[in-house]
Image (cartoon, rainbow over all chains, first blue to last red; front, side):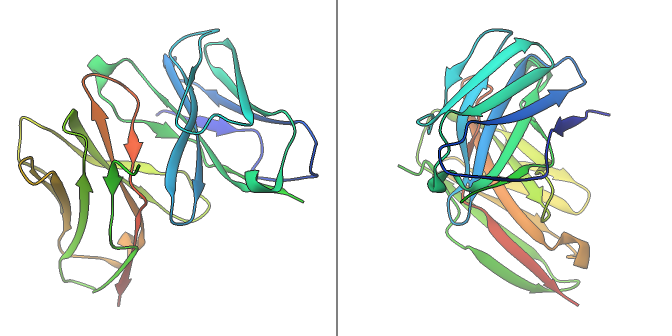
Length: 114
Length: 112
């Protein structure tokens, strides 16, 4: 059974703080993704990674960076948090395409920036 | 530019009836489609998928229909149950790319 865990369920940070969101998957998946979910906008891809130390920008990468030092761990970094980054952040992982495109999601981190 | 659209933000259906959720897409390169279900305070979970070489895929109470010429897919749930109340997202993938493009979601409420 695939498990994707996220370091925090709820987080409150101040404007300008550096924020780290951690995601760990236990199924040896190659691909990992970070999304944010906002009402009326659905899930939007921030960054994704196909391999260790590899990263690619998604649709809304501005204001974010990522780190993948180990295969099982993918971190999202908000360099200087702003109020418009208040959102639900979701991490997902998936194996190689020959095993399907289904993505497995973590429970999400609700981040509030004040 | 929203490449995957769910034009109904919400839908209410009587328990036992059929629920039909719709999704439209604009990118003709999309060749694999998925539906996810999301409860509050949880991550989305995979429900059902369909490849562009098919026009229908069934799994228990859930059936997905794909109309490539209309760039439209739909999810049918029959019979609808109270536990089906959730937000449903459709998603699409293009040409073996693991990256998914999601729609905006439809909140389904099943009325007992």
